[in-house]
Image 1 (spheres, helix red, strand yellow):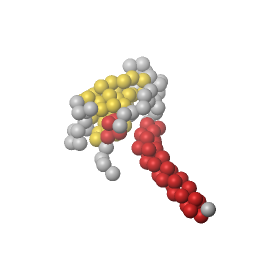
Image 2 (cartoon, helix red, strand yellow):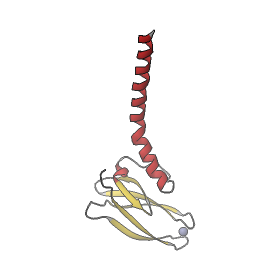
Image 3 (cartoon, protein in one colour):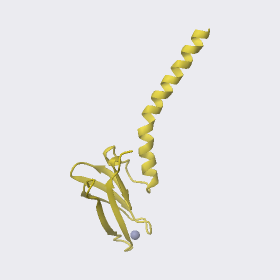
Length: 114
Ligand SMILES: [Zn+2]
C-alpha cells in the first residue's frame, strides 16, 4: 500500500517536472509577446534573442529580422524587414505611421543573456 502510494507520488512529481519543463520556454515567449501589443503571429524562438521597443520581433535570421509595428494612436499595423542587429550595432529608426502621422522610435537589439 505504502509502496504503491510512493510510486504514485513519484510519478506525479516526475510528470509535473516534465510538464513545467515543456511549459517554461513557451510561457516566456508568451510573456514576452504579452509585454508588447499582441502580434498577429507568435514570435519564433529566434525572435526571442532580440528585444525591441516600439515594435515586436516576429522572426530573425543572421541577415534579416522581421518586426511588427502597431501604431499606439490609430491602431495601424505593419510588418517590415530590417537588417538583423548585432550586439555592437543595434537597429534604430523613427517610424512614422502612414495613417495618422504619429512618430515612434523603434529600436531592436540583441537581448543580453541572463
Ligand atoms: Zn497611426
